[in-house]
Image (cartoon, rainbow, N blue to C red; front, side, top):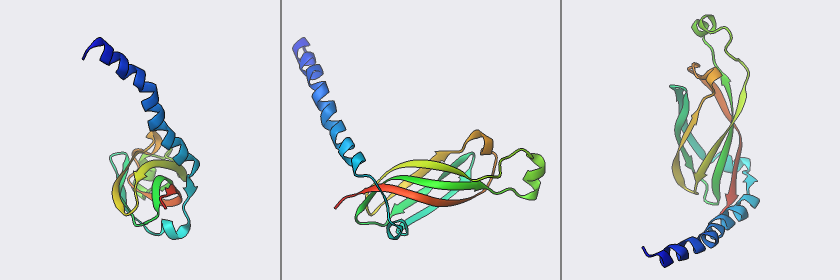
Length: 136
């Protein structure tokens, strides 16, 4: 690569970045909370292990691109863990999981659990909100 071609490449960099970022700003302005009928079309097979919440998610919607799940997770303590870890939290916590899941596609879920609950083996969890944008 010559010095002049490096200059041209570097000179084009701001325009290229603006071109890449502009659609993200347009999309971010169009983010919506999905209606319940769209949320019901999600199929999630996920669980807990080794301090991670992970699994798969299928977006059964034709019209929505999913960008985020907001889930509530409440630690489930059995009798054995209550005696071993008496200071473990019992309250639900809200977590945001960022996604990039187009319509009618399957993707992965993965979120490291906070240190204070990393030793918990099970949680009662539920979806509080799903965010995305319409593709039509």
